[in-house]
Image 1: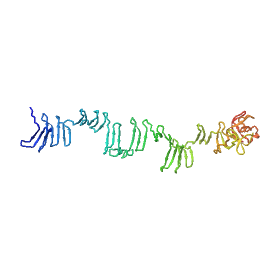
Image 2 (image 1 turned 45 degrees about the vertical axis):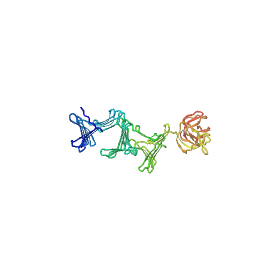
Image 3 (image 1 turned 180 degrees about the vertical axis):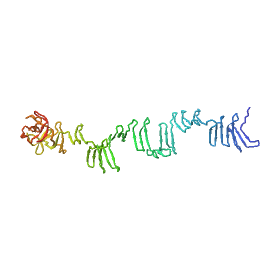
Image 4 (image 1 turned 135 degrees about the vertical axis):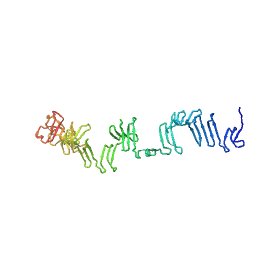
Length: 484
């Protein structure tokens, strides 16, 4: 059996009262409770008489409770979920009923899922914030009051962007006392480490965790290498060409190359240059600007053995138990000059002492030619027993002059004439053979010597003595120059 009431039903406090406190309005689909001095309360109870839903207009409260006592309350602008042994949770679902956002008190306090249904934003009990995953990159963008991005954490490429859009991007790291110890300044591009009572060190490690680069601000040191690695410093010019290379493996410092001269400049405390190693010209300049430029070399015991003294222009070699020798070699490495301080000798690889004389340019004066004095210059001999004999042109055969006198730099019209020593000489044995030790004099054959057989005529005309025999015809033999 059922009764149908159409329209509007009003319930009053008493039959005498005209003020409705409960109204059921079928036309508008409303149930109104309260008014006329009464608070409106709507209570729904379960079968066991336990109150499960309460709408209290006087308190402005909605109160829901399940059979476990878990409560949901909306009052004074606050929404309270949970209690009574149950966790409070808010879920947002799509049209298909899939949960896309959840706010609760489980492991993840906030859980938002992406288009594939996987978590892309979560906050857990340890106050950790996780962005991305499930096929989506997790970015965090912070904007200024004008809506421009100034901080961007990009989960796709792993970058942190700070600054831009009219803002400098700075990063400051403070110690436990609030002192800044690390500063990255986007305006100037500077990175400052240390300060606030802390040394600022920079450590770079290899894949095994071993430090291979250490910039130590405490002592002002830069250490590169170690842990099985060579520590090199390579500096390049703007085109990428290496111009400075400090090679720790071989202990070398290379400056220049690739079109650049590598110079070393050292200055004193006043900024005056006192040492200049110039690779362009291969010069080393020491001193100047009021300073003497000395070079001092010491042996393994720290004793000075070589001293180039610019003040007095002296070169001192040896001392402190060491002999100071000077050895000079030619391009092939053959020793040519040796100044031996132990014996006090000057050792020369040359065989004679020659002096430069003017010679006639009209005749052929080649090494080994016997010369005699003329009116203006020396000329090849052309008479036997000529007492004008001057010597032999040095440089024939394997012999070279050891000492050359009166060299004025003139290339033509002069010849080095051996005055004493060994020299290769042109000889003519057509009239008499030459034996070792025979005295030699001028001959009628131009520029040739012959054996001196006439002692009276030979007086004052002897060139020297033969060091090798020559039996017939013309040739060249070594002789010992001894003018008589």
